[in-house]
Length: 265
Image (cartoon, rainbow, N blue to C red; front, side, top):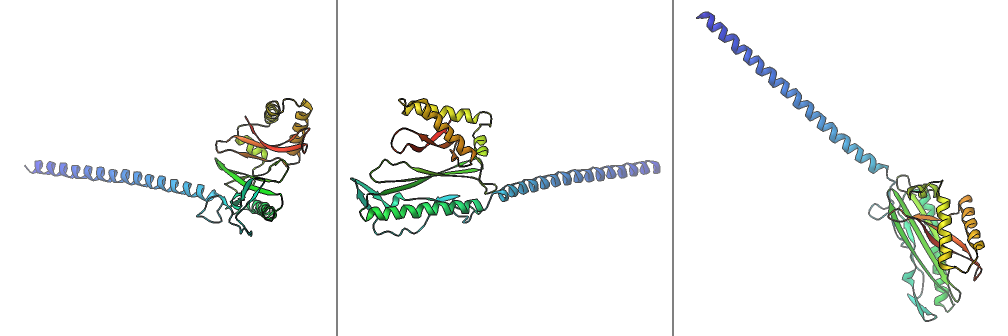
């Protein structure tokens, strides 16, 4: 009888020890899983913060990367008539880069000069001179790049040939994106970009100036090549990543040359 009681006691102790071991093991597993989840959430948060912090800062966090500049327009009238057309002060709009970088600052200085020049011409037209001016801009964001093209058109009695100003900014650094960086974003390479541009220029001539000789297309292509060499080439991306460049066409009429936007496919 005493022996049976001792055996029973041993069994009870063994069972209790097993339960303690199982409980401890479960606690350890639970703790590891909880710790792993905590670390996983922490890494995800840090990664998000790093990505957010990698973007260049805005000058005004409550506004877009680019918005219509709010410069004072010192004029006496809101519109005037010329050659049976009406020209409005509201037609003068330039972009303001809401980006804290040296390149954006230079871009704002340049667009401010365009604005001041436009207001000067507008005032002359309002006083009776045969002059008018319009400006507008387009902004596109593709991946982490911002492209802006500003169009400046002035005229009077002559044919109007717009001037273009283009700006391409890396939103991760605030720096200017080079022509090579932009055409690579559009899916081109250094091996095929020139061929694609030559084809686009030739196609444009055939479509709009079929009576002109190939010499003018050749001269236009040379003009493009020079702009690439001396880094004066103007370019931008659409919101879908299509590349457009500003090409100065050489023609045997009018001013002899004019700039226009050509999309490269």
